[in-house]
Image 1 (cartoon, rainbow, N blue to C red):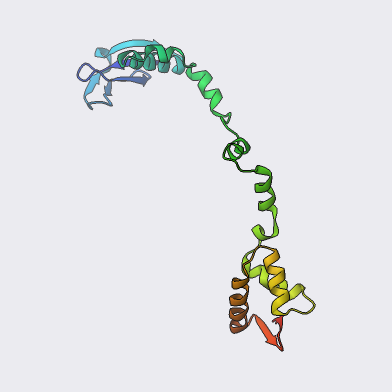
Image 2 (spheres, helix red, strand yellow):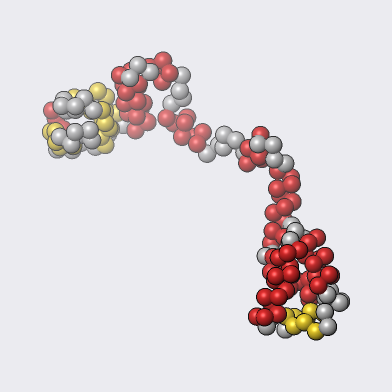
Length: 170
């Protein structure tokens, strides 16, 4: 059993479930005896009680016509699961090609870090010179300046060795 009740002190409206001895007003925190509360509706359907309370609040604030145009709570609940705008529509409206985004997320650069790309260039090249490593990495979106710094750091860290201009992984 659900009831829409009102506070005699502050005129707040709220919904109660079940029959209780007392109820506390959410507006002013006054405690009321359930029997003495003004009950605007008593029903077994929670959605119906919500509708009545919402209708009363809309009427109080002068928005009764707007409220009448809105679907019922049960229908609104079923619409929540349906997206208003899909991700693809949002991207397209912003002028972004969703196909390019999907391709970029599947690309090699998106799945590997810059450091991993530099290390892959060393291990996959027959002659891993600074030029071949830089070409390999820049083709995959890594800036040339980063490649030079990364090679120096990787040699100092002992992950690579450099002999006569050629690099090898250790």
